[in-house]
Image (cartoon, rainbow, N blue to C red; front, side, top):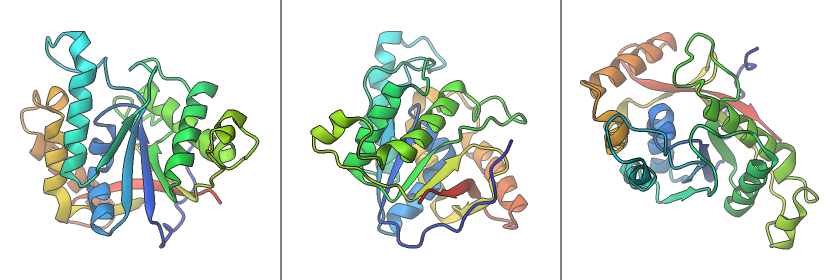
Length: 244
């Protein structure tokens, strides 16, 4: 199973909500694109399902990891111009499922932020690359976000406690999926590559052990750009789905 060909991106987006499972997910796959959106005057906000408590590559005490990774994500967001970073409560790194509870919490966020576009992880597994994109938390988050977009957030009778709290129904018009199979919408991020690199370096608990982060990124994103007809550039790639 794969995605259909991407729809043309909406030309009149003013607000984007990026929803990912862990700190650093948005930055590895999408920080350059986010920086370009911010430069274009789009209001971008981040929502993280967990605080990445199972992450890290050293002997940092486990009880310190959530606050450390939250601080890293806020610094990474600042590197690309994003000011609003929120975290859900009650979800553990490594244990995310597309539950009704998660769907409700995502609907609440969607109805508060009222985005035209959501950027999230793919709910479809990449069999050619199990590590990274196909982390179970990524897949579960992508599935929960998709269900929250349709039908939950737009249905005034779904999660009635949210409507009672003043969170009116909202229709997200478009989803951008990151990390899925065969992404076909390329975004040239050559001009904002340094900001993407700065965002990833802010996640020191996750990237400081890598001997050549910049070289790895340039090689990976350069190959992706070449595959999308942009030789000599670097790009990120997505699948774009209209949801109206």
